[in-house]
Image 1 (tube, rainbow, N blue to C red):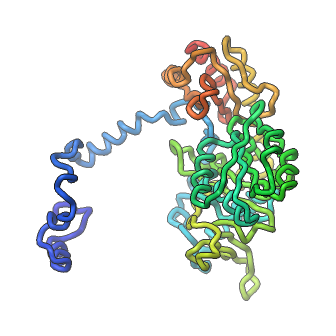
Image 2 (image 1 turned 45 degrees about the vertical axis):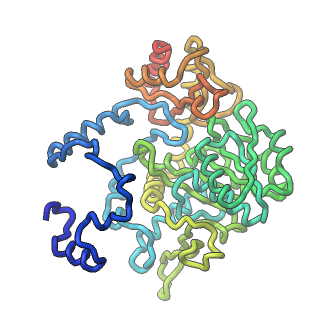
Image 3 (image 1 turned 90 degrees about the vertical axis):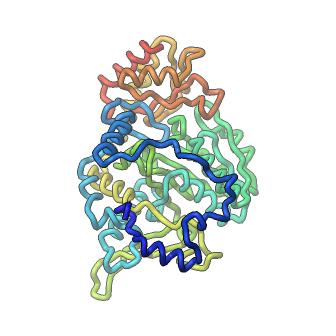
Length: 451
């Protein structure tokens, strides 16, 4: 055997060849014309032994600009938050680390309870009645909310704010295309969804109005003003929200939202250079049975002892395909556990304090950066949570500026010109509870020096 990690013997190979009627590997690929086959040798390095391979991988990993070695002011969906050490201890336990779907409740009570706690926390934060066991991420959760609204209202139009994260809008559009839904986008004014334009676009054909708050620009939307616009036309009101902000802000459920979704990454989930994350999905009681995924419920056994079960499973593997609410057949159980451990560790007061720190530090940073010569804060009168936009001097390329900041040990803000040419030369800055006054002041100094 040449490869000890591929335990197939020559006898195994011979028996397979005999079964399918060939004598060589070459015959297995005979249907592929020689003209389209790769000719020659792949441009890869020679095989490395274990020691050299580990050395090579460590060298590659060392090129990453991670949060341990750099001070980050980059957000736009993935944030540098404090991760209590207890999280890694709990999720590394084998009974959680290898858990997937708790098909057998009698041997999955720990996993089921963890998911139940996650659902309960999400309901309390969002002000909604029911939450599911989690989604892949916030973007797919938002797309699924649009699909739910279309199915519930029997309408084929989604009105989507341009202040929603551009990647989330792409996911919503891709899902809508498969469901033959029409997407109508609403513009912005002063960093917020343009309410006048929104009111003019929402009609009796609209299935849902989709809003993000705090939005992609960090600004806090007036959800109370959007509620009557959506419901006045018989549409559902869908809100995507950073769950940490709900430690301080009024829950969307109390402001009229029918569906609240978002990404739980701020709750103890490592950035991991971009993912994976965990989406949450919460609804009012009316739409409980239309939710995608699954719901864990609390019950009692025949002896009266508390227990947990999968109460609802609305995916096509479990019920008749035409009755399925979604083809998403999984959830992020391990990362939902991260979020549940984080919330339970900090508690209600802790979540409020962390949210308040994000607000206070972000506003301090906006004040400091706004005093850098040539730099101004965009939308200075609009309330924001922990992200805000700065406008750089004319003809300043954000990418080149970020390279200079990286050399100084800072991960700069997000280049908004990547998604909107009108915002070329603008940078989205994120400030979390991990940023200190010294770091913020030094970042402002390095920004001024780089300019």
